[in-house]
Amino acid sequence: MLENFGSTYSVTDSTPGSPEVTSDTQSCLFARYGGCTFNGGLYRVHTADWSRRASTMLAEAFPEFTFPLIPFGFDWLGRQFILDLRTKDTDPERS
Image 1 (cartoon, rainbow, N blue to C red):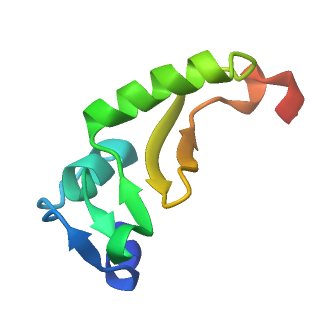
Image 2: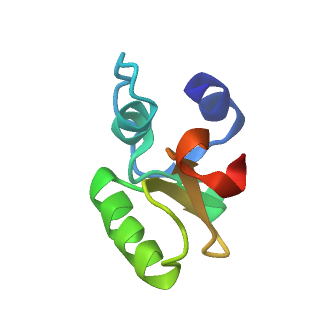
C-alpha cells in the first residue's frame, strides 16, 4: 500500500525514512513518511509525536467519538486523516 502512495505522490519536503517490515501499518507509515510533505503541501504525514498530539486535540474537540482513532496525516485545508481502530462489536452505531 505505501509503495503505491509513494509512487503516486512526490515528497517535496523532508526525506523519507527506510521502510520497516512490520505488521503494524501505522508504525510502518510513520517510519517511512513521518514528517514528509507531498506535492508542495497538498498532503502531510504526521510524525508519531504529532499523531499523539493531534489525537489529544481531536478527543477534546469531538468527545462524542470513541477512541482509539489515530490521526496519521492532514491536507492543505487542515483536514485530519484518521485510522479507525474501533471494532464493529464495540461501537453499536457502526453495526
